[in-house]
Amino acid sequence: MSTAAGVGAAVVLAALAALPYVDLAGPVPLLQALAPIGGVVLVAAAFALATALAVAAVAIRSARRRAGIARLGAAALACLVAGGAMLWPVLPPVVESGGSTGSPPGDATSLSVLSLNTEYGQADPTTIVEQVRHRRVDLLVLLEETPQHWAALQEAGLSELLPHVTGSVGSDAGGSIIASAHPLTCPDSPGGRCDVTTRGERRGSGTAFDQPVAQLADGTLVRAAHPWPPRPDPARWRREQHEMGLWLQGHAHRPLVVAGDFNAGPVHPVFRAVTAGFDRSPRHGLPWVRTWPMSVPGLGDVPPFVQIDHIVAGGRVCVEDSVVRVPGTDHAAVWARLDPLP
Image 1 (tube, rainbow, N blue to C red):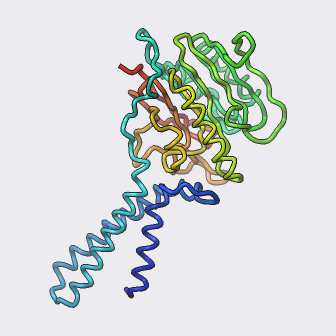
Image 2 (tube, helix red, strand yellow; image 1 turned 90 degrees about the vertical axis):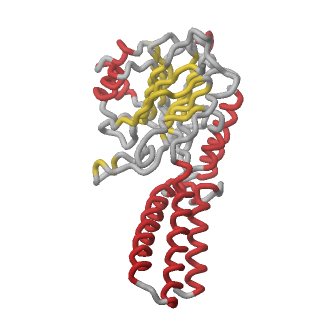
């Protein structure tokens, strides 16, 4: 390899290693979603080069060719370091404090939380209700919820399991529901009354605050999350991520659960900043947690590559979690059991 080629390769590897750590506009957030795949490729390349190095070290003894072996070793090390840097953000995080000062009362029990983006109401209602029953769900957050899908869930028995509800349904991406096994109050509604409304026809998910907020009897705030995706408007994506971070920090003094499709994940520096200090789940998955895309039109089910669906908690810590495939939607459901902080 020539010197110029070697310098070029080093620059490319340095750029790839830096990708999950730079907070830039344009296509960068979309490229960051692919960083873990690039990391796997580079780590695999490092092991392949190391194997070739080991074989060459035994077979070749001339001093001239040892220089080539040294370059091969340097290339393997560079691929390993760059690949590790690209994978590092998606590795299981250290358990955070769970939201600093906000903690439920001492008699609070654990919460079973399930969240799913239904992809415009296409997720199989029977599977959702079965998961609610099987996991003894206390809180269910549904996104992109349509009137027809909500009616199908009621027919499947959801109201018997989770009778307390707030949010909205609609034909756009902004229909979001919080359903609870425990009584809810809605601090943003007159008299704290919770109900389900129907949204008008409009495109998009609305702002970061255009999502339902409810409160449990122990003071825990519950909120759905569905900020704008990084395409076609990266500026709006960044703005709504920032707005969500301000909301989280503004309520860090009390226990809270925010669940949904964040349209961002640990590969994005802005998401890591937004959720810093809070417990984040699911965090267990091989080779890393992946929730999207579970399917692609024309191809059917595909292996997902990025985590954009999360459960973020303050004053609680995840003790068990899972990613659940639900037929009909391109998102996986995410589930977590959250215990009060000791």
